[in-house]
Image (cartoon, rainbow, N blue to C red; front, side, top):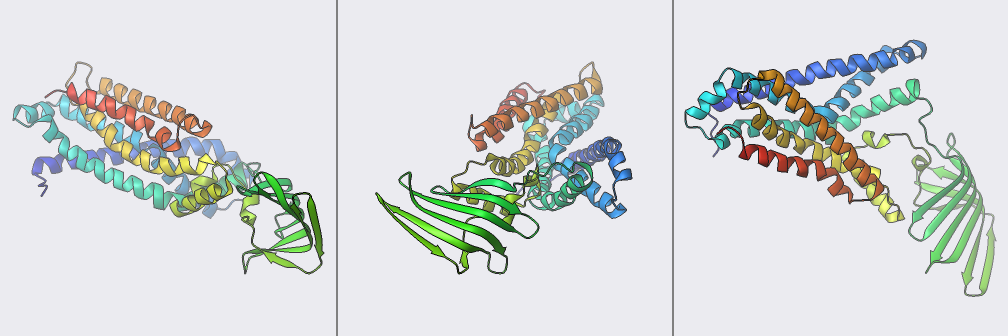
Length: 361
């Protein structure tokens, strides 16, 4: 059983308090910058104080979930450098405590941060991002909707294509439906309907004035129907509306559902998979950067805290830059999504191992 001693408690308290302080200070700065950027929209648009409060709640938690590893690194470097400057780290090592034993309270505190980060990314932030994205799409970036309303093409399954000439989002109805079913890359049947309407109570589309054309080799049959037909198509009204970054407002369950839906349609939509992997990979980054922070700041140097902070910020900036490159590789399909999102962690894990091997013992 792991026994937490007084010295461990001291390091854990220092770790958590400094990371929390770093989080609060950086959050205040980001909120101030964001407010100065959106103050004109807040003044000119008919948003209420409740909308503003909800937005900045979502914005604060979103930035915390996005940049918590960087805040963790800054916090660890800051308080460890202070301890090293006061010769506290050196005294602990001279007392016969190994570097691995010194690392234990850091790992315990880092694991707490990982658990909080996982909770934020997978549970809390998706709900608060709904408020954030609503405010941005309604009052700030009103042109962010990527909805489709005319000449819409869908691949609803690997062998079924849908074309809709026009769609009305207000009453959830469409005109000029054409549904093509393929067998061995040949058209087996074509269903055409003058209009279609969504029935939310039964989760079906009602087709009116439709016809079915089937093909069997050189044979063709045609039938026309005037009675309405309720049919299940792997298509829903929300598929016609898309906002930038809407995957950030989806819960983990909704992301998994969207991924499976796109796979059933034969669509390679990587944005949902990237968001899913990012939520987990970012959380475990805290452990890696904790080890790097201790290895960098645990040695007393002539430059003192300033040098350590500069190194920490440089490492954090390098990590963010590498993460952006990894996301680009994952989106383009150059590497598998899971590998692309974990490349920064793998790379910096190697750096952490090298730094630990050269750390002051």
